[in-house]
Structures are given as structure tokens and as C-alpha cells.
Image (cartoon, rainbow, N blue to C red; front, side):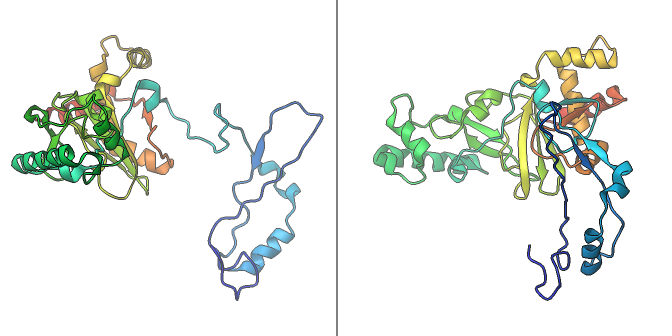
Length: 313
């Protein structure tokens, strides 16, 4: 971002941070590289560019040697210091995660009313049978399925299921057919081939401002359920919670009667808690591999999660 051209130097008119790194090579040393950081210098008036430039010109590293902090990379060679916490990450305990339903033709196979859905799908299938790959709303993936003898393009009312399509709205009707749905496995892996198998899942995502949003469902849920402004989102399902998680939780809490379903209730209670949301935001977590914290009052989080599940239809 450019500064004001009338200012005298790059430190004026620019509000972004400035970082100075000193790298010293020692050919005789076999030790791994370590960086040292100095968290802050003297506070300067933010718009006084000349003073900042003068301060840098007269900078002496010896003055700050006792205040340097050693920065060591983690096991994955990340140099940014990670927040330490007592627990695991999502991908440590789940064998698989999903993104939610993304059909590439939602306007055709997802409708508010069942009658509208039936009419829409029947018309689309009729056009495919007539025009093949040249039908409207046919992308490369669907074109390949049209050319394959493995897929059928006849209407089947048994493939109509419910879907959570948009937050704060009623359930929609969804034609869950692997012939028409791109990435159909995102649905079938959790909710079955026709999308009508009830299977408990937690849908979560982060906004661009790292605000955690969560929803519990036992039905298919759209990838765009939370709408625009999301940085990322992910679905974790009870069926993909690995057995090793049971032993980890038993060992940590010194409890013998912990089981997978109970752990999933705990995770739901945790992700919906205000303490966890604050933790995520304040520690700048992003992406989908969020931390799973071991909270002291385990039983309380289990109860909160179970209450959420009990509200599902």
C-alpha cells in the first residue's frame, strides 16, 4: 500500500507494520537455525515519520540484547509461534472431514417445495436425454457421467431428501442422485447414497474476521449454509471419529465410561461455547483444522452438546 507522496519517507503515510530481520550465517556451526525477535521498540507517534526514520538510523542492537526472545520452529517447520493448548486438532481425531453439499446445479436440484423440485428435475433429465452433453447446466464432470454407461438419468422419487440449504430458513428438498450431484461422495459418506440416512454431524466455519459459526445437523447440509463472508468451513461427523479418541479422552480425564458418542457431544458443546469462540479469535486460528481443547468441566460440555442434539427432528 503506497504512502502519501508528499511525505518524506516510507514511514509516513503507511500504517502497516515494519519488520527487520538479521540473518547471520556461520559455516562452522552444525546447529539448526534459530531466530530471535524483539517484540517492541520505544513507542513513537504513529504519524511522525521523521522521528521513526531517525530512530532506525540510530538503532543499536546492543541496547536490546537482553530483551531478545528466541523463536524456534515447530515440528512442521512453522516459524510463527503457535498457541500452546491442552488438547488435539480436528484432524488428529477424525479419519475424514467433508465440505458440505456442493452440487454445481443447486438451482435445479434444490427447491423449497417438493412439487417444484420434482418438476425441475424431470425437466432437466428430459433435456439431458434429448440433448446429452449439450444440455444447459452441464459442466465437464456431468458431461463425463452422461457419456458413461454407469449412470442413469431417469427420475426416482426415492432420491428426494431434506437438506439444510441456508441458515435461518426452513429445510429444502434435495434430489440426491449421483448422476446429477458433483462430489456426491460428500453426501453419501455421511448421509447415505440417497441422502436420507440420519447421521449426526457438526458443521462449522470461520468468517474472514475469525468469527466461529457452528450448526448441528443429522441431515445433509449445504457448503454455503452460512452464506457469504466465510473464510472456510467443514463438516465433521460422528461416524468418522476415530476409536483412538476414546482412549485419549479416558486417559486425560481419568474416566472409564467415555465413548465416541459422548465425545462428539463434548465437541458440540465446546464449539458452541463462548469461551471457545473467544479462544479461536484471540489466538488467530484459521483454516479448518481447529484445536480440540480439554476443558476442566467435561461433563458440562457433554450435557450442552446433548441438549443441542436433542433439539434435532
